[in-house]
Length: 249
Length: 317
Image 1 (cartoon, rainbow over the protein chains, first blue to last red):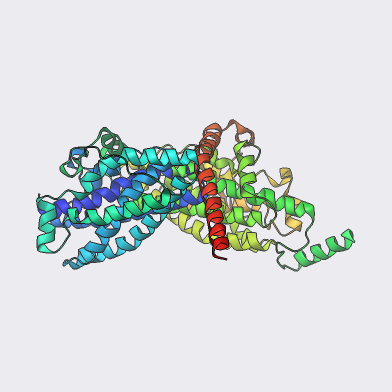
Image 2 (cartoon, rainbow over the protein chains, first blue to last red):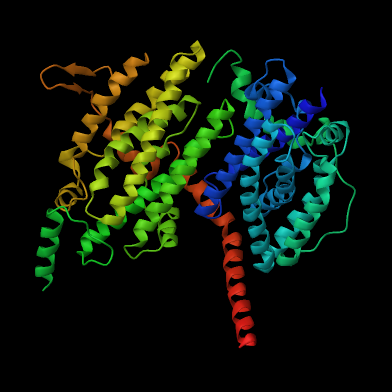
């Protein structure tokens, strides 16, 4: 697997898995405005995944398009960060997951929009506009829930505590990530951590939430070693193309 | 005095002018509109459930994106319509409560299940198609906020209808299994769709007054006929069969004649005994109840923020 194909798959798979998860909120949100917002963010994620996966397929050169990659890979071939596959849980769990991701996606897309590769830069510029809005939305809810009631404060603090051990995948620096930086078409993902930290700290301050004591990080998504949840998610998402492999939709 | 106002109101409406929120209107006109607009809003919201059911299993990323955008549009329609309703002096949360306790009605069509992917095509093609027939005349309805909301709703619905037909066409030209999905979906959605126009004209209790007030423009049977005349050739075009053995073209009238409609089924579904009435209401109630702590948190935060701002201002003064 070329470093570039690997890198693009990571970008595409993060967006795909988040988009798939956010789609479950449609019709089930706490207020109508949030049904619209979460579906809209999910839709953006699906759009981003299509752009990255299409590019990944071209990079690979084996004739796999976005759908071939999304629907005909098994769980060990997915490269999404473990954070993105954590279950939706309650609204606070979904918001905290999204916030931890958005706080990374904003500096990521900003850095990639300066890529030496014009196609990567163009996709990233479009993504950057979207992720800035996503962060505004998820951060706004971190603050509302953290500052709101005793119940909401307790719930969102727990969501945060449960999810923080899963962020490590986002910043894994390996051959793919380092090659991206060296060749100038991408960014070494480890370099995004300070900006993510500062996004996190400012939201914690404003929401009155605490950073839990650090625990060992759960890693593996970038290597295709996932949590139990992913296989179920993929089974549901892939059911039609797998059942009717010869069909066009 | 009241009589004078009523006469002026009726003359005003008859001259095709729009009634606006602050204008005088008869209580019955207000009540009719609140009932109709809120039922319409509830239908958009409940309608998200059967379609949302297939977002996770849409068979390509493009179809997934289109379906998410479509269902999001329905939520947006719900939002405009609840807002139009609020101009008549009711609160969205009260309307929700009536929906959740089973007091308010919504379109019965959403009490049918979406069982295979072609149902998403059939819902767009038939259900949104029938909704457009019903809703285009509402763009000229006498109540301004409703009429204006409907202009936007109808534009989006007509896009939804085309994407639904496009799904059906793709399936009908696909593998044997896909063709079977498409025909199965048409078989299940055809009759409920033509029931969407409501009871036959000789048995439609609210129609006459709504016609007089320019809320309703065409009768249920007129709209139903128009829908059938438009849809039958579309089914033929893509090689699907309308599940009505009595369906035939009448040269003399220039219309299709259809077989008898099972009004007993229609009444049963309206009375709460359709295949999914209980699931739909349970899903709405669950979303509302599960979201209570979130809404409370948002309200508490807004209040705290307002207090902090006020105390900062008084400290500065």
